[in-house]
Image (tube, rainbow, N blue to C red; front, side, top):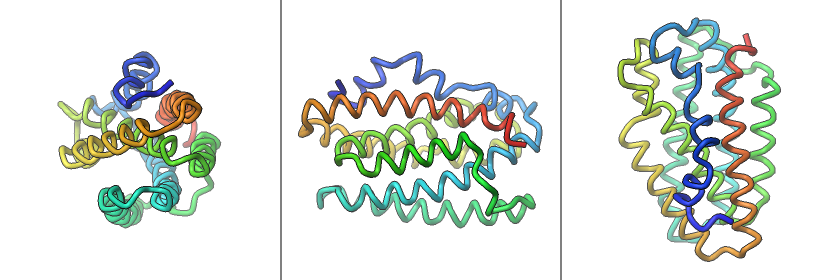
Length: 208
């Protein structure tokens, strides 16, 4: 049962470690990643980001009024991120309409399903996805080679970390008012996020 976000992290330390540490991230950090591998991941991450925007849109329809300001701020940041992805794709000569890799498709389908969950469950999933992304890059930023350091600094920035902290408070508040069944479901879906994150990093080596 999920009683708080910190409790979920404490109860799933190994799964969370695997979600936020991967050969792909280490290769970006030490500069050994091949451009084709990074580009393959980047194309799919752009697809993921577009579907993540829909996940946020669904969360906004359920959120209590005091939470709207935070989530709308996140929506504005995600809007900018989507435009940044488009510019980056043009700069690197990458397609913006590539078919989703099966791994990406599983993750986006998972988000679509989560969008139908009660607010507390959805809020936990949304926080977990953002936390995994932010923590993964921030932990691997030190010593990371260019051009990947630029991306890591964007995704692991202090501003993004602060936003993730606010999402955690939002999810904790929702969990406090949730039923036992909703807390159990949130814990189950949190573990699925861990698994999907690990698979998404690994996808870089099979999506070329």
